[in-house]
Amino acid sequence: MGFFGRLATLIKSNLNDLISKSEDPEKMLNQIILDMNAQLVEAKKQVAIAIADEKRLHRQWQSEKAVGDEWHKKAMLAVRAGDDALAKEALQRKKEHEQIAKAFEDQWKKQNIAVNQVKAALQALNNKIGEAKRKKDVLIARNNRAKAMQEIQKTMGSLQDTSAFDAFSRMEQKIEQAEAEAEAAGELHEEYSGDVLKNKFARLEQTAGADADLEELKREMGLIPAREAAVPARVEAEEAPMDEAEMAELEAALEELKKREEMAKG
Image (cartoon, rainbow, N blue to C red; front, top):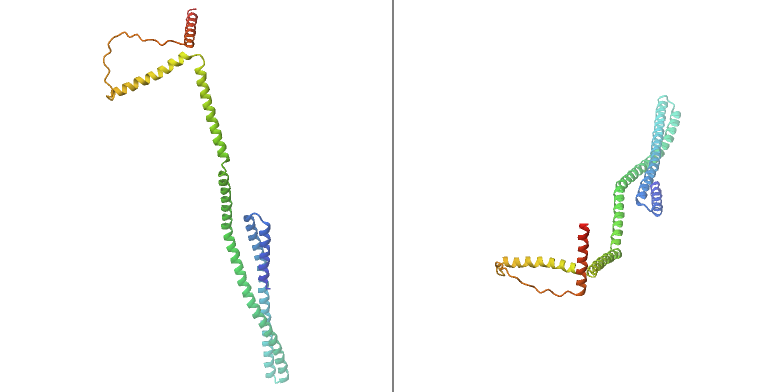
């Protein structure tokens, strides 16, 4: 498994551990980004080491190639000097350095390919982390909206519980019943308080005015003849005999009136 394969496994294991332990998605996402950045820093270090190795191999290749070229020049110098034996030794040394240079060249080319690959992988990882950072705020917003919707649904669920409304309705009915009982008690108190005559006169005054208004309206609409001039006449109305309670009430009222007049005079 290559370096980036191990890095991906490490990141995945860390994320799974965070997911299993975290209960707050927002905190988890922030921690994931922090871990990704830490892994990116580590990846950059490894890529830098790979690049340094590639440059070292390239320098060693160039160095051995330059040494081989120097021995080639020395072989030419020995030939000009007429020393073929020395020229052969120089060529032999040149060949040795060319072989070493070829080995360094092969290693450098392989390292160069590997460096280009890890650079591309590092760039891809950097892009992924950048994308994750951009998506993080969106995911946090979605999580917050989901939590808000859960609270709304919870509130709506509690509103669907009719127990509170039923209790409110019962209280309303209880109050209406209390009002009706109080009104009935008032009527009974008024009826049996002994002030019967006063109550009868009050009711008579209330209905008399309404009857007069109704008669006037009918006359205005032409439903009944217009009122004729009244002819003075003495009509004696028979008074309805009063019962004992009414007589007692009347006597009590007269007695009270008499006392008030005496008090006023005194």
